[in-house]
Image 1 (cartoon, rainbow over the protein chains, first blue to last red):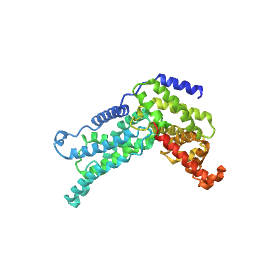
Image 2 (cartoon, one colour):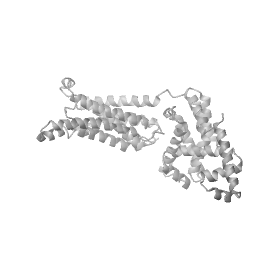
Image 3 (spheres, helix red, strand yellow):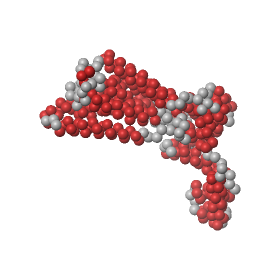
Image 4 (tube, rainbow over the protein chains, first blue to last red):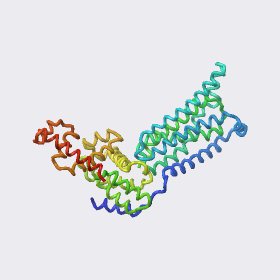
Length: 215
Length: 177
């Protein structure tokens, strides 16, 4: 053994303290909460909650949207947390994303069958399709950056995959925040434009991951 | 005869519950393993090897919270080592030896294969030379019994008996306390 390595080992061992249990999960949760709070503030300041929020909370559409967002975020956060460990296998459980997507798709088909063909385009585009994906991406950025910050202190080795999973998580939570603003109410809209926004956030994560997660 | 995993994981678990001496022992035990790992993959660049050993030890230390006590320790350690190796190669500061390339390209499972191979070597070293050689030739390198006999300058029957007895002895040892 070379002397400098021996000295390094002595120095590292002298500075040893056992990490608190579940330090990874706690670290991710801390930054996730911080990022989501920022995203909420950003939404309140730049967009504001929808005027009829109180009434909307008694309807079903907002819960359909929130349920979709929460399910995506839940599947994504499990994968994202696992990917912060160096020996993480490929995130196979991301297939569970198919469940919320299929549920919304089923609702969308139900909507289409009870709507006359000439109104289909309204179902699909709503009034805000042009801005929805971009706003979702905007709201996801604080969460994504917070997660990348958390990830840097951990040990991801699949940086692009981890970045994408962070982006997916950020997209899901940003969508949850956006539900408080968004006036749309159809599953067709959610399936297309919400998913596109979440996809953009994942893409941003996949691009930023290899650059910002290196250690 | 213990595998690295059986020897090192208890040290890490003890360290996680606050035993700093076990942690010191663990780092000291990991250094030569890491050195061997990097040396086999980098063509003769001893300085790079030692740098990587130190970087990996430092990462193990500063990122120790990412070890999941329910999972194998060696897989965690070599996943970090592999990351550091690939990072160095990506920066273009070292060249991989031909032997190393195949394994880095082969992907995530190769750490466990490496550890398994190192363990096999330790086990074989405990056997009489003739038995170890017969097992290595036929079971690891995949020679036929006849080829192994020709290579070792012994009879076919001798190879068969050596393999048989050697494996028997290893089996006894692995089952033993």
